[in-house]
Length: 112
Image (cartoon, rainbow, N blue to C red; front, side):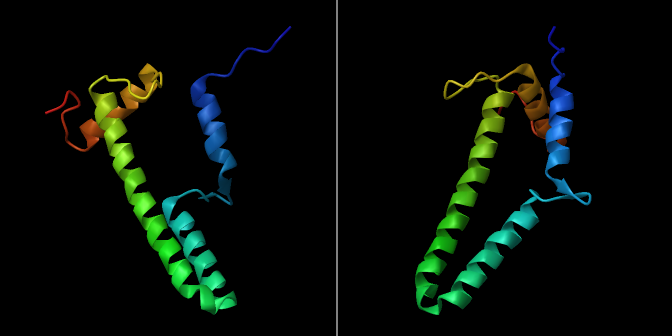
């Protein structure tokens, strides 16, 4: 006999707990940025002749981060309008969450 599946909320709580160490969310943006900056600093310290290349890598990382932020807002706009793009099947929970974000930001979830 199989055990019943856990509700999505329980799985999400467990996943969030798994990324915490001593109550600190290690996947929080400041920690990710700090880890990347420290990694680049150590790389420049170990290989100073690669400083230009590593600087270009840092610039590329910032550009891709900006594109990620842009994509998040793009997906929020699409979810707020009820559109499904890229073949992804958005469940109503994701759409509800996107609408709540829009409401918190003071935006109209039905679009302009």
